[in-house]
Image (cartoon, rainbow, N blue to C red; front, side, top):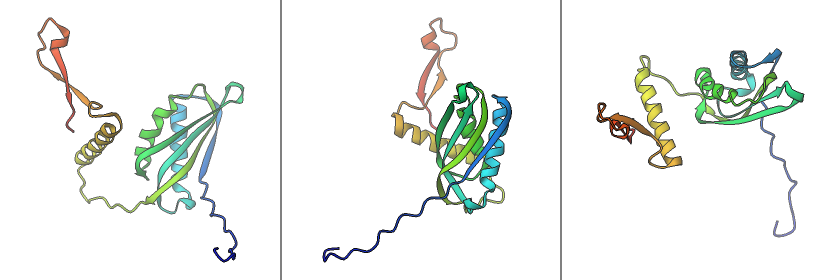
Length: 174
């Protein structure tokens, strides 16, 4: 470059586009959307283009019944996921934010994570795994919102005639 000789510019390879959509037979909301979302998650996870990688960020969108409007929600998982159950837990509450019934539901992968290669123990304790995930979620919440972000209610004097003396807020120690 310094001597005036440049090489040809090479464009970056476009990232793979993994996208699934589902046309709903009628205006759908509630449990119908949840079932449709479950189907889309299963389809995305079964796609060959995923090549065993986890999903880090997903875009959930819909074509609404009202005047052909659209709705879009970008979801970034706390950790890259390949488990359909945990993905549903993260995505179903976002469906409640939809302003109107949908006639088409779409799911697109925005960013992939590392390959899904974490091996589980043969006899894994689900309670220990849940508590570890809860501790990590509390740590991330406190990092984002401060030390008072995760509190629990402790009963101090349940028979007190003053409501503010019946219980106190204490830091949650997961």
